[in-house]
Image (cartoon, rainbow, N blue to C red):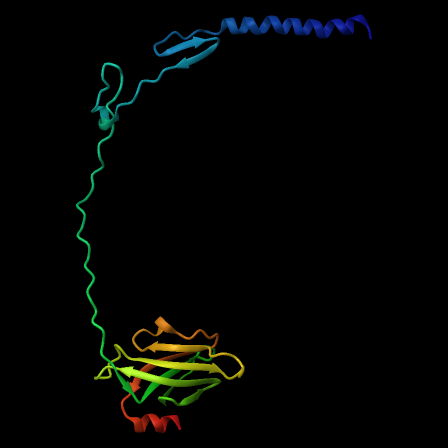
Length: 199
């Protein structure tokens, strides 16, 4: 390696060492209000903001803590709604129930009356009515039936539904089946009509 090749990098480093301090010395020093220079670092002091210009800082520049912000305006709280008590409906046992079945694939429905303790076939569903209770006037409000339903496609399986169904709110206790819906409509008041419909 020649001597000229060694001298060139050294000369370049020396030149850079002379240029950097000179450039730093030429930077203007801002001596305005709220600024200072420490070791080449310029810092600025920002004046504290007073919200809405309503509260001024004291002689030491401190804003009272409790007066920095005004409380947000709140509307007058409304009185809570008192829930109304719903009296339980007195029901009596009925001899049977009127049930409806819907085939969700075909859209066809059928209604059947079942006597208490009897079974009825609704397509491939076997429905057993254990009990039906309704008010004295046989109104829909308060009418409920305890039923068990099996899917005869799998005779060994457990019932697809077993529990109370409510005429006023069928979705409150509904059967979960991919094809059929079954719900109670009302109780039958005559044992003769319930027995005849179940035969």
